[in-house]
Length: 243
Image (cartoon, rainbow, N blue to C red; front, side):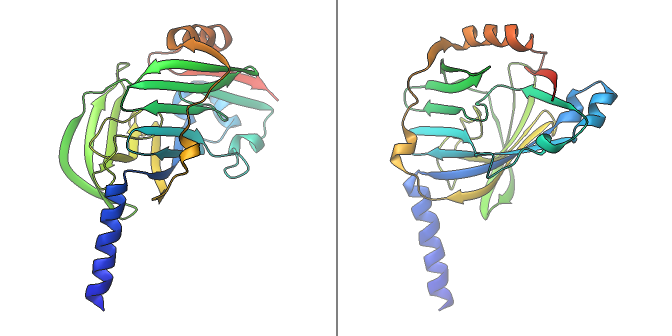
């Protein structure tokens, strides 16, 4: 009986690895206070902002999008104090979609800004990962450690699982020999952690976004500069609005 249970578990794990498809839910924990100098502003908002994202993928396509707010409420909505901090790090917004074709290297990002929707056209950017034999376990999957430095000088520490043999990860980060299940950016400034993994995905959810105003990444960055001001060295844009 024990042998049969072990055999079923072995087969299940290998089916997942062979399927090259699934859905991963991530929790993103952002340390807001690290990016604020004003002590008054720090007192107005919680230190950590937690949001959830889903990554849907097969062997060549991935779609990354936020979980609806009714499933993952924004703690900033009831923070009190009469102010609201908006932080823009790149990546899809609350109703955005990040579509990546890993075979062609094509990226389409649907996002909104000031009630206008844009479709950003881009290409997948590669990172020079340094692989390590250090291991850990996340949701029952053995993960290996990898590190990299972004073009802006941010340090990345990723834990990826070769059990899920697709080069995907949260936001635009990927390119490893397996799916990233945990990602530490800028020494815990932003941490993504997988909280759920499913072995299925609906093909219709992997369609590329269409419509909206098409712009290049450079053109959209200029629009962000006009609306939110220039980004800092780490690519962050922070503004404050009164409720």
